[in-house]
Image 1 (cartoon, one colour):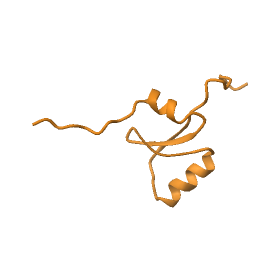
Image 2 (cartoon, helix red, strand yellow; image 1 turned 90 degrees about the horizontal axis):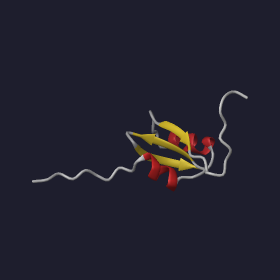
Image 3 (tube, rainbow, N blue to C red; image 1 turned 120 degrees about the vertical axis):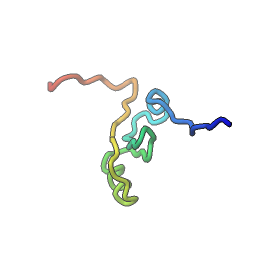
Length: 69
């Protein structure tokens, strides 16, 4: 008997799908994505989702910022 795990997307696939969005990750899966961090946090709060990692996925055309200035 073989057990199959649900398909979990890797970070490159997540980045391709959510370009320009703020995303909340929990246990390696996207639980929500919004266009602003404020919308994302409000949605997570409304749904009582806690303990997520929040990141923004930049587009390739955005300048890469390094350092403090």
